[in-house]
Length: 150
Image (tube, rainbow, N blue to C red; front, side):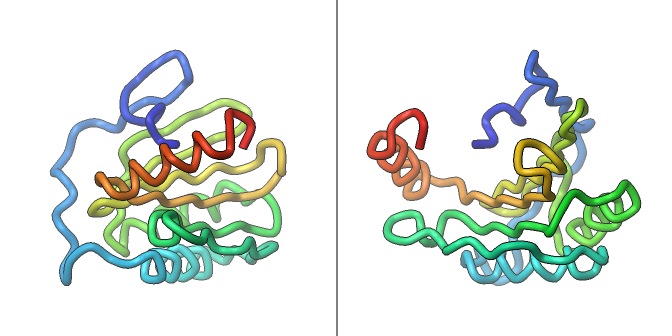
């Protein structure tokens, strides 16, 4: 999901200048519920309104994905406030993608977050995925099961 944000490339991702590595999270790696709560709290702090709630992943992916959807695209002021609110919660920006659908990639512990604004569904979307062997294997199995079009 965030592989394209790992290095500069033709897909438009531009890595942020190297800074201090994100330290391990106090209290260990957070659960999906904790990350989902952080996303919702950051969105609320930025003045964003939630949109439709999607059912949480089940099975192997239950603790590997956390997301939040807005009720529409956010303006530049709210996007900046969202980024600040996430940074205050321990997330570090790692890459940005410009273009008609801007996106920002962040990380915190074993979690990688990407938020996009606009796009096909014309909304603000925050999707965090957990890295690590267990989740990476679960994502591979889910992709193989769902096929290329999901």
